[in-house]
Image (tube, rainbow, N blue to C red; front, side, top):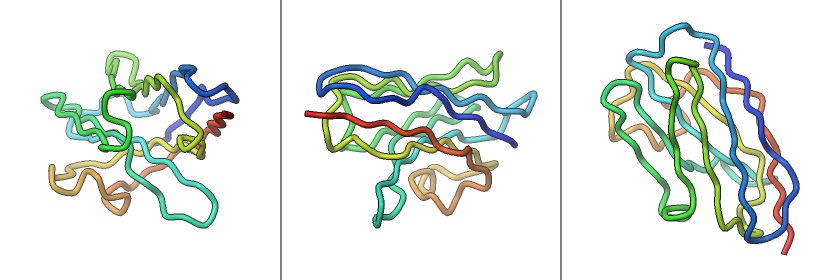
Length: 125
């Protein structure tokens, strides 16, 4: 699956952004789509995930209540709505796709086989 992430930018603290991830696959049945973020010198951090089948959603505690993951699988697109952004949300955000990921593994970057190129989010205080 080829993934194209977009929607990043530079904003002030408290602002909102919506990231989009468009997948090349015509159907994402059986896939889990995830968002991760990474800052220089740190490991890739789980942000959110949504499963195509059943719509199971997982959100990292660090963004719960501020970030929302949603999907429009008719458009093969997954979104990450980010509100009340903080300086610590500054990172390169990646979308990822993995087939057959079990629930307990969906927060692990190693479980995802396909990755987009990343979109930069910069939040200034």
